[in-house]
Image (cartoon, rainbow, N blue to C red; front, side, top):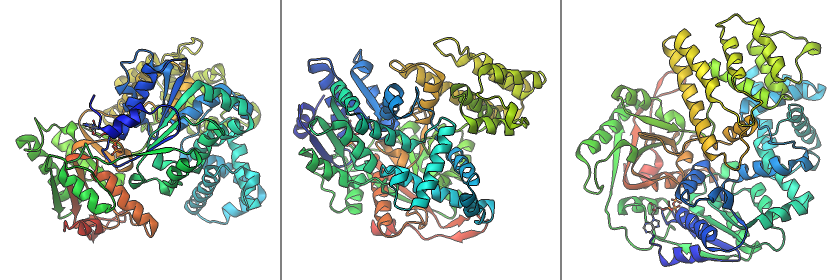
Length: 615
Ligand SMILES: Nc1ncnc2c1ncn2[C@@H]1O[C@H](COP(=O)(O)OP(=O)(O)OP(=O)(O)O)[C@@H](O)[C@H]1O
């Protein structure tokens, strides 16, 4: 393995805090992985390494690169900070009211419902909510309140510590609603683990002894809660923390993240600093675009391959999609002097500022018969009612106290039970009693029969037979689109299950752990076959020979809501997007766009194209 002199210094670093600040393609992921390998393979003693990544994709990538180390699961925890918190709370969470693996309400709709019910149950909040008028306006208000609660949790504030006491009461009511379903939200993972380390220093001490070294990737995206959680874990004397980050790739400030934590880390932990200034990934043409986007981006050395930047202009979005496909078809047919070998679709990616950019492209790709996959957000949701209902049943079996999903299921299945005879807590047999209500062949009965096949009494849960039962029903009883949708969902569940089982060594193979891993996005496949369709945020850390950035129009990229410092973040978004390319970079835009309200509107090319001298 060839490493540059500075990369080798990082890999060889021993005790003490270390900050690595480095640009795109400078080998951050590589040095992080190699350092974990060296620590695990070369250092003596019984200890583990804690390798924290910002995304599951990055964790998968690191695991993949280290998989030949036989006992890697025992020697290192490789995952996101949220997954680490999940593990801590699963084994030590009793001290903060968590019994076993936490039940996560990861879906916005569920949290919204919890808050709605909490507000309706309180006369003052009820009045506030109903005064908003239409359901749509109420939803908007709920969304804003949830955002504010998430902000408070992001600053590690408990309900009694927020300034506005009425808001504190609302926050408390929401939390109580979550706890009534024995559930927590994503922010709670950090907040509760922070509290645990702070209130029970012995537990933090235990984890410090267990993990002699901590390595953190993408540290420019840390937020207040994450930084303070790490401080609480490290205490006043633990210093074996390494952070790797790039302030120019900070694209989560909208979510409370800030690169200032890199500087705070350097100060608070008296960290040594190493800069990596080469770009081992991108051709000269791509690096030039990156420098124009971020003039203080200093790159050492010149990449020996020229590369190419192309701009495509479509009359409308359909035409834009057509041109992008033609561009890729041409590369596949003729190759390119700067790219060795055949240019297959899995060497290419199409990036969009948001998921809607692909609306016209996807049908066109399907018409061409191209294999493609989408990674647009961390959460994968079932699209068919059958699998949605099945998932709710699994949630109820994993967490019989889950009142929210019990209610959802009763509503969806139009089962009218009065409060008094509601099957609560819902155990497997109570759920099974419902079987009798539905005639044979009814989809609800099929779901419950599938649930019966889970064999929950076995310590090793098996999902396959349940999914087989659902698939057999779809094959027999459903037609066309419905059947395709169900089978697609089942295939997704099978993939999630396979990845969970493969990764589960060290994790309990229980329904609750499985659902927790899905909720954390930890079962998602990092790369699939075919052309990648990615939002900029989900393209982070990836690289492709050919990158096309579609939808380069004002209002799309930059986003129409961006103003002031958010515009700087848009520019960093483009910096991240462009630097995913190893060789060829292509921008595309449409001159006309169909607006959501149905009329066509003339488009202005993105200001960034102009600033880059490309229009
Ligand atoms: N010393 C090296 N010699 C040759 N290639 C290298 C070297 N270091 C890294 N690379 C290659 O450069 C590319 C970028 O490396 P890596 O993904 O680790 O960078 P990064 O800093 O994490 O990038 P980003 O922050 O943009 O995601 C990879 O293809 C990697 O294999």
